[in-house]
Image 1 (tube, helix red, strand yellow):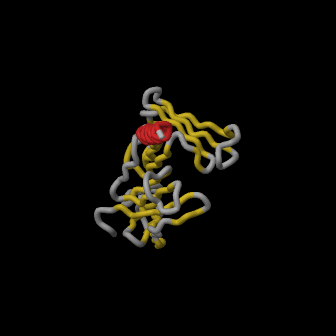
Image 2 (cartoon, one colour; image 1 turned 120 degrees about the horizontal axis):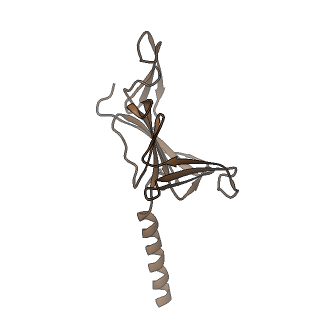
Image 3 (cartoon, one colour; image 1 turned 135 degrees about the vertical axis):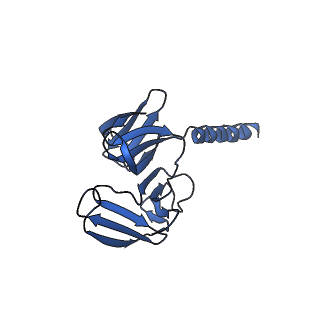
Length: 190
C-alpha cells in the first residue's frame, strides 16, 4: 500500500514539474523591417514536445531557441533541419522570445492546435493574425462567423480594393491526432 502511495505521489510531482516548466517559443512578425510598425502575426510553439515532426526549444537563460524539423511526425529520426534563433532579438521582420503561456492579442484571428479532440487545455501551437492592420496590401477583418480579406492595388493598402469573404469555423475539428479551432477576438466587429 505504501509503495502505491509513493508511486502516485511521484507521478503527481512529475506532472506538476512538467506543467510548471511548460514554455513557448514566440515569434512575432512585423509589417516593417527591424521589427517596426505593427505586429501582423504571432506564432506560439510549445517547447519540449514533438508534434507534426517539429521539436522546439527555448531558453531565456542562454537566449537561444531552436526549431528542429524531422522526417517522421513522431521525431524518431535525426533532424533534417535545425533553425537557431537569438531570443530577445530582432531579425529583419521577426522577433523571438520565450514565454510561459499563450497570450492572445485583441483584434486577431486566433488559430490553436491541441493534443486532444476537444480542443481543451493548453494548445501546443497557436497563431494569431492581427485584424485591421495593413500588411503588403492586405487588410483582414473578422466577426464571430466571417473573415473578410480586402486586397488593395498598392502595398500601403491604398487604391482600388476587392474583398473576399470566408466562413470562420470556430468548432473544434479533429484531424488525425490533433484538435484545432479558430476564433475571432475583436473589440468591435466590422
